[in-house]
Structures are given as structure tokens and as C-alpha cells.
Length: 202
Image 1 (tube, one colour):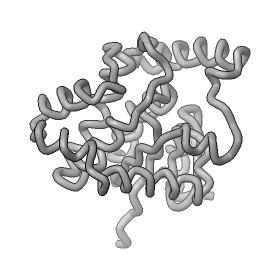
Image 2 (cartoon, helix red, strand yellow; image 1 turned 90 degrees about the vertical axis):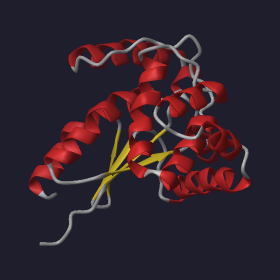
Image 3 (tube, one colour; image 1 turned 60 degrees about the vertical axis):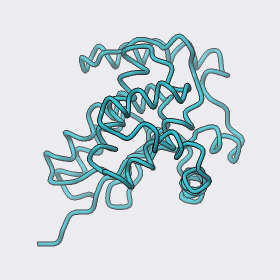
């Protein structure tokens, strides 16, 4: 039997919708004998490339988003609190992920959930490299090595390459879940992702 392809999950750590989806996608993948390839990228890079703007810069949409995210979290019983600073830069967290992925993929996958929880459930400032280092160290990572990696050109170039790949593949927002080459944008498309996983596509 052919091995099933992994689910690609493209996200920015500052996206509340990505947080809501990330809290569900790993279990969904496991239920269907799939793995998840976590792909943090920077939405700001994509927005600049395609000329769009974040919802926070669009007052009517921002007001709806605030209500919708809270409603979504209540529906799925996901802890959620708006961070004191939102949106915020996520380069440190994304770079840390890619370094951790090279060292320990399982730890890197767990790191995603812990960072999301830190931002959207515990109001921790993940734009601060010290916060990212605290999280990773508590999970067992080498703090000094990771601190050096955050300023390493190879790690920076990796994140730049991922952002360029996102643009090249038409990933215009987050979260973007890709199953068998099929793109599903948004946390509200997870039901469709699950239908695809169950049926094998249509």
C-alpha cells in the first residue's frame, strides 16, 4: 500500500486562525494515518508581494475577525485570549522552528503548539527572542546553540527561502493546509480537509 503524503500546514505564528487550526490539525492527521509538515512563514512578506493588507488594517473586517475568532474558540473549546500586542513579528519563533526541525523534528512539532499557546492563551510576547529561547529551553533545547542560530545566516536564509516558496506556490494567507496537492485556506476549511482525508478527494 502506497504511503500517504503528509499534510502541509503553512502558517504565521501571529495568525489567530492558524492557532485555532493548529490545535486540531495534528489529531486530524493522526486519525487518517498522515503526518504534518509544519511550515511557518511570514505573512508580511506575502502581503507585500501580492499587494494585500492584514485584516487589522481593515477596520470592518478587523471587528468581524475579533468576534469570529472568539466565537470559533468557544465552539471548539480552545483557550484563547487576545495578546496584548497584536499582530507582532514572528521571525524569532519561525527561525527557531527551522533550527529545531534540523536537530529534532518531534521537538520542533511540539514547539509549534507551545509557541501558539504562549501567544494566544498566555499572552507571552513571542516577538522577543528571549521568550522563544525560554520556551525552547524548557522543552529541552540547547539555549546557547539556539540563541546563536537565531542570528545565523543559514537559518535566516532558510526562512527567506520558505517565504519565497510560499509566494511561488500561491500561498496568500494563513493558515493554508495542503493535502495531496490541494490547498484549503483558513481554519474554517478544516471540515473540508477532513472530508478529503476520509474520501480520498474529489
